[in-house]
Length: 79
Image 1 (cartoon, rainbow, N blue to C red):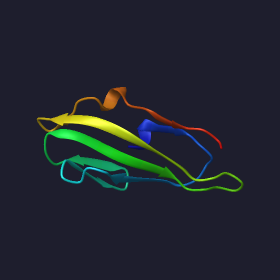
Image 2 (image 1 turned 180 degrees about the horizontal axis):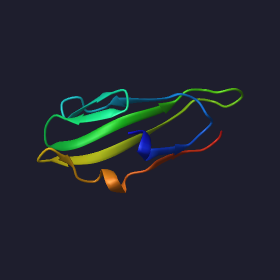
Image 3 (image 1 turned 90 degrees about the vertical axis):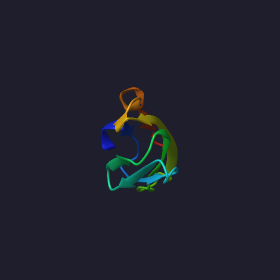
């Protein structure tokens, strides 16, 4: 997952599945559990004078592949 998140304030980035029946997240690894829409919550921790920030990525899954992951990119900005 780390290849799909960029920028930010240098804080630690964490990932959590918002659709645990469709996909699971462990560290930076995403596992497809069934076909459907996989949503991943991404949080960047506060760092120095910068506030924490979060975002969400969505992927379509089917036949044991993540179909739209190549088109997904989440970019954090210094805040």
